[in-house]
Image: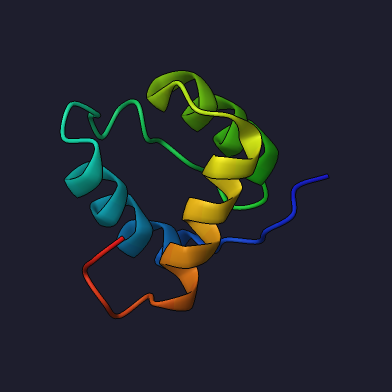
Length: 71
């Protein structure tokens, strides 16, 4: 089970942050459906070539500072 929970509304903000950090990622690559956090984490691990711990940390950081544009 995923360590985080992301709503579709939150994902729209987080996705922008992720795309700023990894500008090669497209909207199609970052498709997300609420409740599918586990598949999102797995997909991001592959796309950014980082381990699970890093991806989860990055997503949590983005959620904590949701109104800040920085990741």
